[in-house]
Length: 70
Image (tube, rainbow, N blue to C red; front, side):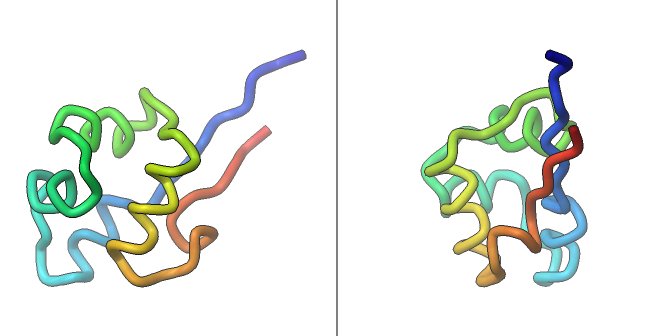
């Protein structure tokens, strides 16, 4: 079975929320800046819990941040 790709809009949402930095987001969700960078660049798929924390940090539904491309 071929692997899918987890897509995200984190960079766009950070800009829409007044230019939140990667460090600020990382602190808000309990992750490292390096983890946020890897997720933004779609090199790393976050755990389900971290993905929900990110959506809560932006106060948007999970589906507004993440999508799955088979």
